[in-house]
Length: 87
Image 1: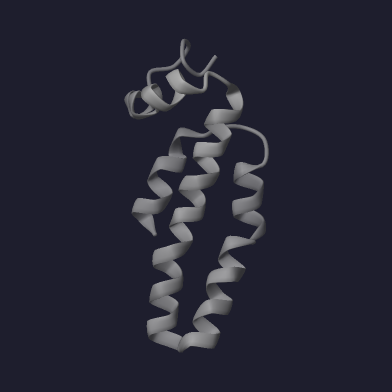
Image 2: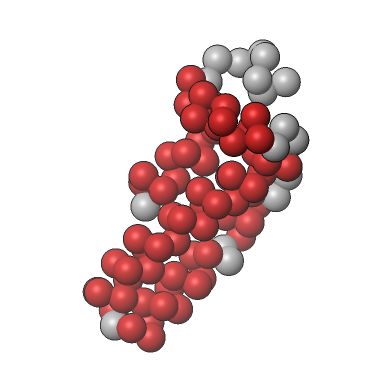
């Protein structure tokens, strides 16, 4: 149980959202949104450095990459909060 067995203070941020929609799916939706948000700064950087066409292609490739798909496929990972910050 992610809420009871481990100490992850960042999960406090999810408290209000989880109170509105108390479901495991809520955690997965938030995780997907965090990963999707990370594509925005990477795409902007790629467009600035490589041009509009290539930059957009790089952003799309990042968004559909196997690494991101595998990370959000089944379980919630609290490290998902770091992905937009690292992007």
